[in-house]
Length: 366
Image (cartoon, rainbow, N blue to C red; front, side, top):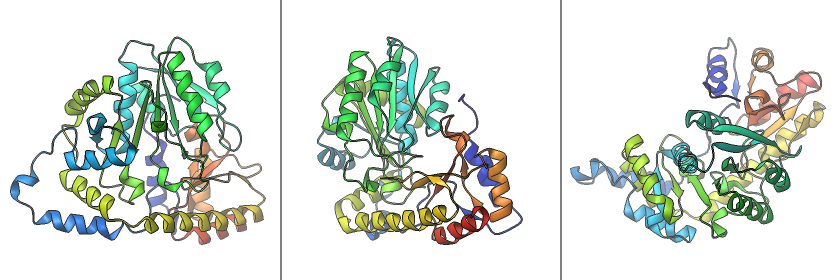
């Protein structure tokens, strides 16, 4: 998968311009409300002094970095607040590649397509390790693929697109592989609040100079438009990451950071539990319909995606567009995520119309 314009934009544009009603299950934009505490934080910010409307410190508001650090068990100096999780991953991957320790990036297949895109953009080479049918990643396969050319291993748990959650032993082994090859494990944990298995383990639980953890509040608080994320770097990589961040972005949004800080301090854990339950119900509704349609599908333990395969109807971009025209259901073609699941479709369960979409697919394929 070479660097190119992501297929998300092409499918979203086709769905928007379709000559019929379409249920959008393309991108991971949560349809549920952010916590009230986040709205309260924004209102509070509106009355601040004019000086608070200027550039934030490049590495992020100190109070926010201290709050994140306390929650993640790290020093606040290790944290760079970024323009969403996308920039956090970019900084982490760039740091891995610029050290002169190789130019190869190991990625899973299927893969969130922005990772191979960033790899190419940063001048790295891609090497893919297929997952099992349920999205499980076998560390032995990563070990076999790793070499002296490996600069970076990128993983995402809970996973987009499969919904797999990697257990502690997998994360621990991936860190060990990175250490053995002078590589850096980049662990993207943006869906950590949507683990429904109880098995999620952050790479921060493993003390190592060879792992960088990235995250974002986009999904956590249903605010993908705010662009507030962060990366946790080992001390020896912080200054280089801060320098690149300054050159690329200067700083991310000050009011967004304040609102996130307010939400972190004042959001009841019940908010997250309710969202996990909402998604569990949607997964049940959607997969029941896939059973009626005779489809194979992944059973996600986290995140909010289901991959489905319909017999004789592969997940190509042409069939994805045809599905929009025939059923009014817009998903993503499996081929957008690599080769291992290229005959599947991925559906994002972030719409109140999940049941309606499920019924349409059951009628089309059942």
